[in-house]
Every structure is written in C-alpha cells, then in structure tokens.
Image (cartoon, rainbow, N blue to C red; front, side, top):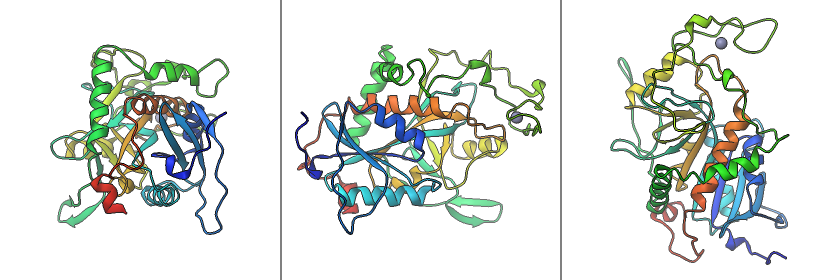
Amino acid sequence: MAPKLQREDYTVGWVCALHIEFAAAQLLLDTEHAPFPQGPNEPTFPYKLGCIGSHNVVIACLPAGRPGTNSALSVALQMRSMFTSIQYGLMVGIGGGVPKPKNNLRLGDVVFSQPDGAHGGVVQYEFGKDIPGGLRRTGHLSAPPEHLLNALQTLKARHSMTNFGFLDHLSKLTRPGSPFLRPNDASDVLFAASYEHKDSDDAVGCYECAQESLVNRDRWQARTGPVQVHFGTIASDNRLMRDGNQRDRISKELGGVLCFEMEAAGLMNHFPCLVIRGIADYSDSHKSDDWQKYAAATAASCAKEILLLIPPTSHVIEHTSASKAFL
Ligand SMILES: [Zn+2]
C-alpha cells in the first residue's frame, strides 16, 4: 500500500492546459495518489496527485475553455498555495511549430524551452511598447533554474548517444486502441507561409488547398527518427498564432523561434519551470486538431524522461531565488 503522504511531500508541479494533455500526464504516473479533502476556503482547479520515479507530483490543469497566460499563472499560484513545498514546474502540452529547413521540425516533435544569449527560453512576443514602425519588446522572462538546465543537458547528452528514454513512455501511451496513436504521416503537410487555407463546405481539412503550394521538404535537414526533440526559444502570448507570414516574421525578429504557445509567458517570472511542447500544427491557417493527441503524448513522454533525470529534492531544501520572490 502507498504510504500516507502529506501535502508538503509534493515538490513538483506539472501544469497543462487541455484535457488531453491532462490525460496523457495522468497515464504516465507510476502511482496515482488519492486527493486531499478540499478545505472550505481553498481554490478549486482540476488536479491529480501521484509519483514519477522519486518525485511526488501535482498535475494541475487549466479550467475548460480558459487558455492563456493569465489562466496559467492563476492555476500555478493556486497550486503553490495548496502545495507549499513545490519547488519547480513543468509546463507540458501542445504548441504550434515554426518549421525551417535547418530544424526540419515536424508534427509530433517536441520542443524544450532553452535559454540562449538573448532570451531566457520563453519570449512574450506581444509585450512591449508601440513605437513608430512596430513594437519594441520590453520586459524579460526568467530562465529556468540551474538544476533544470542541468537535467536538460543530461537529456541532450543521452539523446546524442541515441538513448531516447521518452520512447518507452510514449509506447505506453500509444498501445493499440489508444486515443494517442500517431496519425498517418501523409497528413503532415506544410504549405508555403503566404498560402492561406481554403475552406471546404464538404469536409474538414485541406481538401481545397492547392497541392502545388505544398513545401517540398525532401532536402531539409535529415531526420533521426519519427519524433525529434528540439531545444530553443518558445514564443508565448495570449493569441493563437495561425498565420504563416506572422509566424515567420516574429520568429525572425526574435532570432529564431521553434514554437508558439499560449501559457508559458504567464509563468516564467513567478514559477521556475521548463516548458515542453509537442508540435500539433504549424501555426498557420491550415492548422487542424488531427495531431493534437499524439503531440500531447510526445510532450508528456519527454516531460517524464527529464523528470526522471532530476535528482529528488527534499521539501526542506532552500527554495530557489525565484521561489523566494514568489513567496
Ligand atoms: Zn489548408
């Protein structure tokens, strides 16, 4: 029987936005724990408790129909008020990719936020001052704490030795009959950035879109497997990106972005975390939901892989400086 745990025993917060992301995360728990009784004045948000390796984890989800940076921050703050020993987080779910010849990013791939010289791993791309001719981005989002970046480096080293731990977790999520199965590769199509989607009255999908506007990716960077993991800048804001030209323009302005999403910018300065996104579309007008479940599964599998590489933290260790700022 599982030992009786206290709220203080939970040290990791895993945040997701969609119910399919919440489901994928729960399926990867080694053991599920019973919830605590709800206190009279406590906030309510969907969550699940359990352990992964030696970590006791709170998996929290945003309320239905409430995506966005503010909602993510609200849930993270509520989670940390109920589970005061949480040291760091993983923001895990789907995102829209920025495919380029040099990254050959495909649907189902996974992106980890990783700082570079100019950014902390996540950029809030619509935050700043309007100036003649455009927007001057201001403000800075914090980089993940060092022990998460150490784990990221270990993961990268393992991947460079073709040791892809996430594939074991992914195989558990994609057993026959699972809703998280990989769609047919033929449905992974990329249109030219400036070619807009043509709606069809009869069917959902790109049936009316011109095949000659598809991008030929035969000569893009070679692939190492069906799911590739990428590391770099994630663009985050409250707006759903579904415009190929804007996608490429903003990416260029920021020195190269791997994906767009809608929650991480709310968290980074308040909740030390890594952002892990499975690519479900290409952030353009052709976006569909076909790859969402599989992308949620690949992201959750990578989140479990890195969590298992992070040494267990005692809930009494000194909080990181970011945590102190929060507290
Ligand atoms: Zn289309």
